[in-house]
Image (cartoon, rainbow, N blue to C red; front, side, top):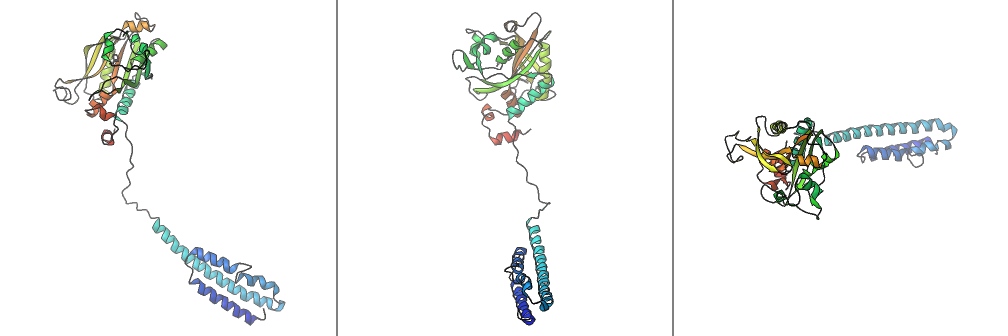
Length: 347
Ligand code: PHE
């Protein structure tokens, strides 16, 4: 550097250049980049002046340093001001873009619905669970022995015609009733027995109220002194909880090979309260399930002493209960998973 005048000129030039460039800056980032450029100790317009200090003759050094520093401080201040200005603007923009209107109505989350079958199954399990029943789940493929023979329905028994069976082989079939589970439970355990057994069953049957696959809930209680009255008491409790408090049951004589006596259980019509309507076909009563006192032959076949123990069993059709409870007139609606149907049965 020849003399201080030259330096002043140079510094003024740099200042002018920086001022000029400041007009082109448009963000805090561009300020940052430009500042880096100017102050770079090797290539920067101001930074390199500081570096050159070493080469300045001793008598000029103090003045040189002072003037360069002035410009440096000036530049630092303008950059800082610019940076602050841009940051403020950028923050404002960010706040505007991230603004949340807390007065907007919230988005309703779309949630799923439990299938009517699942609802009825869960409720039934809860009701009997609260009476101390345990759950036993059988298998959908059964042997002819467990589904029929052990349930007092030997090969040539006319009751086999009551249920059109899907045979898989001579020995294996798709169970037609959850009653098959009764035998497994009684073979495995001596009384007291108190189980319910939910599951799918299969019959070659197909119309508005029958489907080749449907669900049942078996109930079995075996202990000392169990009678039909215990059955009626528990079923009364069940129908009150599943339908309505003012619903009661009535037992009608029926026939199942594995129960003696056997009954069909009707509930008083929860729609017309006994006056007679379409649902109860004018009778005031609706048939809901089959039941009975466990046949002594079945107990004995499972190694349970029928002089000491007695029991009752029942078989609830889950779809039938769901159709009655939710006013569904075709069983197919329960298997189509049509959301328009399912959404109406949100419970
Ligand atoms: N298993 C019979 C059916 O499917 C119902 C039933 C179960 C009847 C238990 C009596 C006792 O029709």
